[in-house]
Length: 91
Image (cartoon, rainbow, N blue to C red; front, side):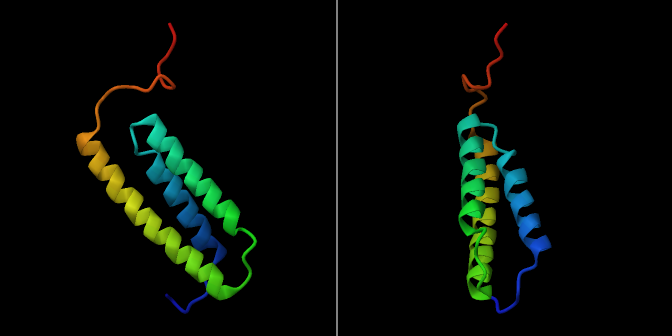
């Protein structure tokens, strides 16, 4: 675990990166799940005040971002090109 204080800007950057990565999933369900996990994780940790707890949560978020990036890459290689019913346009 790092011994530095995480800045608000770094936290916001991590948040945006997680949401940006979520948008890379072509599958609606995976994309929404990833966004929901991001929202829930940041909401759960928004009241942290102890520097070690903030640093731990930030490190966990960075690890989750790396996992999401790998999953997005793998999914883009093997995902079917079928739209979800949630994305189908009604004509």
